[in-house]
Length: 461
Image (cartoon, rainbow, N blue to C red):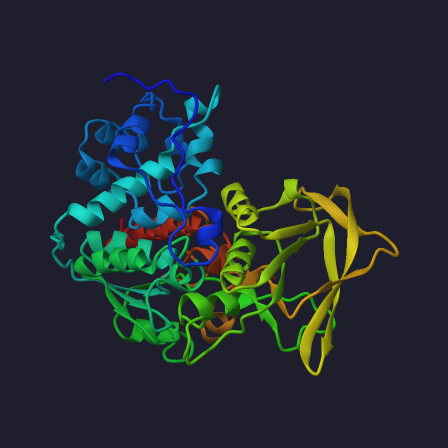
């Protein structure tokens, strides 16, 4: 088949910015079959497969793209599914530009192949056209418990179920999906996509019990008493951080975690919601990561004038470039080299936020330039809503109720990086519960690593 040597990848069709910033429908519209075939033809099918080395779950990327070239979209899906339990999710939210696509040979003299866009196309095609038949493996006689139904937990559960384990997933919230349902907005990841992926795992035999808080409803120790031979902890990092500045207790101050959970999971923006969220007039989002972009774009859709304040420059923004560009297109303002020092209030509600200008100094322990305040540079930004998006930590509940489980100073569970094994025999962990807030695909990779180690542990290999 002829190779398409066009230097640029095919653009992803999207809703117009002045339309999408008023609705919660998905922004990216997806490739057509014709576009997918043309983009797949840009792949050189390199024998040494550098792109695979950039994928945390080691999808055989050239092989699935080759199937797309042939028009065998279901065959492509089967190849992806050998490595990934959540292809429709990964095709949408993974930072391919810093992972698989960063290794693509086509990126040396042009743009890399649109691997993520092709993965999304293949997964969406499967969900639209394929039958629901799933081959449920024969039970191998062993039970494993998984704590949390986010990307690491679902991946671990799926890999073990394919090996015949009876897997029970315990989820604290009332809906399965973890950060995929409570953290990522509908306009980036439609919840029907997450439900479809979860339903596929259920068809494999995975049992999901919601409204179960491990450490409160039942402990890890009690799970072993119930006959589970191993436990995987993928409980995420849902404990928000604040700056510790004056005014954070005012009404109108949210953590990004709460703001997004209310909107994404509980649909608080709808009239008559049991847990309403304020429709701000002027919202300030503090932070520069993907979660900050999600909060900013959500607030915009609720009708606010939105400003993102970030203490470094645009160059240092940790959010995906695509998300930043989408936010800017949608009319969200950015104030760089800006750091809040106080939130001003009136009658118990946010009135404004006092900020100061920053300048960059020598790199800190993270390797990024350290921001330091400029003396006498304070100024106010009018606001009736402030959303803090400066990171999250693992909830300490599991640690405090589990014997012999070691954690680091940030509250992350300490594991063997090669196996996911914790200090407690038979207990494994991965994802944000270990690393703190990170990407979906890295959490999936950790779940995959732990599933392999759990199988070896139980089978005595």
